[in-house]
Image 1: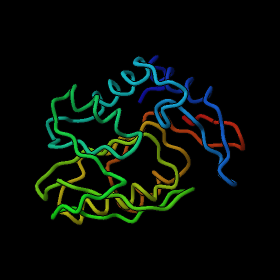
Image 2: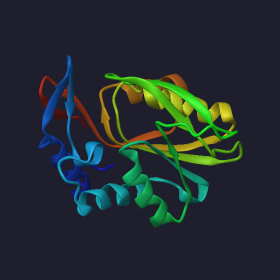
Image 3: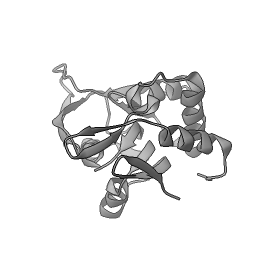
Image 4: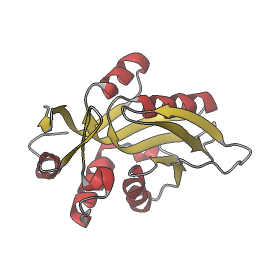
Amino acid sequence: MSGDDSRISLLRESVIAAPIVWKGDYAYFVHPLTDGVPRQSAKLLATARDLIIEMVDWQNIDVILGVEAMGLPLAATLSVAVDKPLVIARKRGYGFADEVMIDQSTGYSKGEIFLNDVQPSDRVVVIDDVISTGGTMRAILSTIERIGATISDVVIVFEKGVGMQRLIADHGWPMHSLVRLEMDGDRVVLLD
């Protein structure tokens, strides 16, 4: 993405202004697109949606996979805008026959994610709000491949740290972000 695009500037400025909280030794920015707090404006959500629409080859997509929780608002707006079906990587299982449980961990938590209704023939775009260590995304993408579906694209709003670059180097997955940043103590530092 071009750093001089006013829409990218809006996202960059919004994350610079985000409050920072600490979870143990882990600095965490609190942003409308990643946390729903402070209040998410329609303009901010539409800006991220429109940038993603322009990035993805929608002719090569069968299904949008949104990651719970904050990947959902963005994935839902994309689904409506591009007329593609949506499935959700959920934090709750339903026990369906094709359900796959995914062990996942992040820089600050561990848990399970459940994937339903991703078929071996599907070409999937994965949408999420933020990536840090890459633990959750590694588990989800590995599971999509194990199912036999194709990872056509992965788009993350905020790329924090080196987790995404590590996943690309290790697996060659097609991953993109709108804004790259790192934390310097209690301060967001924009990259690029």
